[in-house]
Image (cartoon, rainbow, N blue to C red):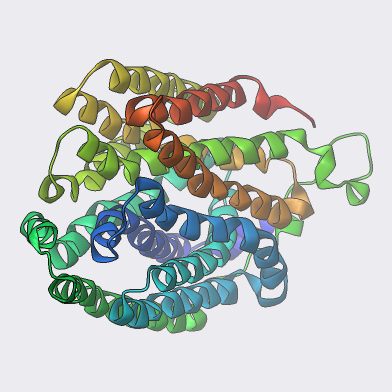
Length: 426
């Protein structure tokens, strides 16, 4: 840690601001999915919720496949060049939306989302351990929370910005599409709707490419995880493997459940809002409500961690709040149920900032590979919404039961990790 601190001295806040900009960028791209789900369901004329939720499957599944390769890429490029590469890959994913919108082929939209996720996987594999290890472990959750504010402010803005462009007058468009009997006229309406996605995604591609060039030429230093703390366990440090750190594997599962719950609260709230009786013009902004709750959670964590609460304690209380709000969403209806789902953002806010540093504790030279394993856990955002979509369509379950089937086990396990699981191993 001594070498890293010296290297960052003097330029620390400027460099943290640059990392904060990266968190803003991938927050903006990630939370566009909440608006894309209803947009693509309408524009591509999808019939079922599980089809619309393939948006999250394509986006988050890329993390599972790319996390470990990302670690290998970063070992060659270094953290700074790896960040720039991730941004360029994201720009390519945005450009895929041009032919997708022109042809209205749903698989092309999903391919674009998968490529965006590939870029984000590289970017997050570099950025998250970077923020975790540049200061004391006990305040890592606080630093990640500051980055999380940048991420969630972007997340609040992105659904509003995209919805105002691609879902403007969505209620009327939906009514027109449903009322048209002629297939050619219906296709013309949907083609015009799909074309709305082209300008914003071209703009994002340009911004991402310019930011990649800026990062590449910046003075942001690389950090060598091998220089971080060595384990004090009895086995020689050089002989250790990831299998000897059970808290890391348990942490990866905690990330899996956390991201699944977060996606359900942030992106799934749009579909759940439709189930509760809200129209499309209302639900297109619901993702921003959840992210506002997350922003409040980050502010609380900055104020309370580590001065009044440890990150482990905050994680446990957050999981208990998640359980309580999940139950509230089941036993209430309408605005009350929607409020419970939106407030899950408050419960979710500090889960990533708390789980990530706890899971990479003591990994030393294995920090980069261990971080990639944790990034793989983001696949929970792909699989758990699909479980929800399947159960929501099942006649013996429905959306209300489906939401509980996803959220209750997720928050129960996260509570276990904050209580006992993070202590496993060395």
